Length: 380
Image (cartoon, rainbow, N blue to C red):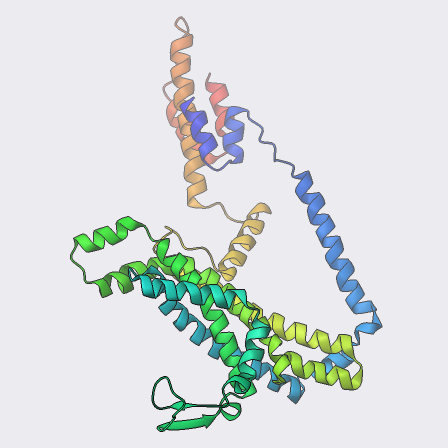
């Protein structure tokens, strides 16, 4: 029984199966194969329609994909994403600390900020900032609680341009969501970690940056990248202030040429490419922060490809047997020989003693692979 239990734990080999007369039947995943066939059919059908339908107008797509207007719009989209993302996450970290503060004023102020900017739509925020000059014609520095800007004074319409209004709106909106993401990551750290660090007498700054933040990053990073990806697409709403980002420029071109679908396809592909790059970066950042949580890091796509190729090659039966496989097979056959010998000695009291060379023969057969069961049967 001990030998059989070991067989189920070890990789199944042909010699091990033959040694015990067991037949391993592969599980038939019929549902998986049917679902895979349906998915493959749908994908092929979609690709066929892309290639055969002339209304996609791939020549127009190729003409405008690298056009100067589209590329300039893409650069402005990336610029808005980077600036708004940085300001949003820095301000969000401050708000998260305020929310966790024991000060009721700071905690309440952060709560009200998050509540307000999550309640108001992003488009409305951008339009309000763009029309701030209606409320405050001039802005400046001077005597508090007065309009005496004796130190510096600016025209609001000049100071808050369409780019500034879009950046302010995106940054403040992103900060409200980032604050909750960071606060959730900090709260996910086990309280015992904080108590252990405090028991060691570590300063607060060391506790936060060396113990809490690295562990909280594992919970923050996935949601943070999700927000950044959403921010890339969220920049498309700044067309309401006539800022020539990617989607705005595409709209201008197809309104002039009436080539709606090919130009929309240009925007879709560019957004998909940017999202793909961010997703790849997210994978490697998550992999880095997983070092302290898992015993073995998840494989990279290249490592997965190599492992898959090795498995497929091994299934063909052409791969040379590794040392572990030989050792396990020899161990199984040798232990089978031990059990067989002990059974012979116990079950056949009146029979003649087994041949002395049975055990060495079994051990030798274990190294020989599939010949072991035949020789065992002959000895009995």
